[in-house]
Amino acid sequence: MDYYLVTEDSIDITESLTMIDDPRTGAQAIFLGTVRNEYNGRQSLGLYYDAYPAMAHARIKKIGEALKQDFAISHVVIIHRIGELPVGAASVLVAVSAPHREAAFAAAKAGIDRVKQEVPIWKKEHWADGPSEWHDDPSHSGNIK
Amino acid sequence: MSNAQITVLFFSFAADRMNAREKIYELSTPVSIQEFFHKNLSASLKEPLESWLFSVNEEWVDPQYHLRPGDALAVVPPVSGG
Image 1 (cartoon, chains in turn blue, brown):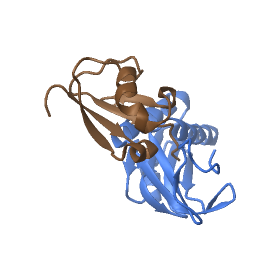
Image 2 (tube, chains in turn green, brown; image 1 turned 30 degrees about the vertical axis):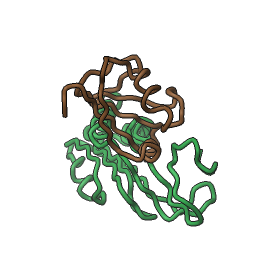
Image 3 (cartoon, rainbow over the protein chains, first blue to last red; image 1 turned 90 degrees about the vertical axis):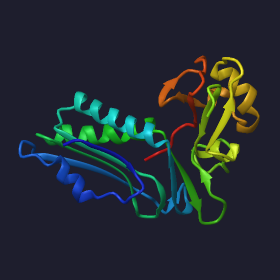
Image 4 (tube, helix red, strand yellow; image 1 turned 180 degrees about the horizontal axis):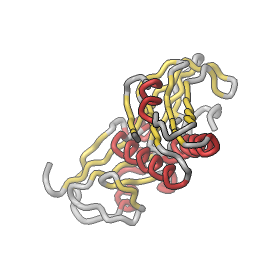
């Protein structure tokens, strides 16, 4: 089955893999984005993710449907977690199943690339040594591209 | 809400600069997003019109879109998810 979710709950990886399971497929590729403890060498304590939930869900669904058009894959699950996330937490999951691995890898990569470019979600870095800053804010202190 | 109002949604640093995630505005006459932005938002949001994306009722629109009573306009900064 295909499944799309924007949630404040932790991402259930096992359940996601169950959803893309299919005896006609021989490959499952999963990309998991996790919260890092630094950004450009500056220590971070975690991230806060803001979202426009209705649009984010609609956009994630559209990306999943496009992946099924563009690649020979059978099922896709895309989940983005929002809210306060500590270092190490999974923030985003793209999981696909396909008859063969080439399509599975390619679709998972295209999926996460598109999620990062197109979904109305924003992250705020909680610096260890200063005030928190939005990644997209032009007035940030210069550590974030 | 009365017929002549619109709701404006703010996210990320736009919400910080407006000190609100949602505001109600009166629409006395039909205006484009561009006109509405310059009259009501640009002083607080600081970044120019070109820095933002806009959606109305969860569909992307361009700044020439004319706002109608009851519309929910979202001011959307460049995204940074993942």
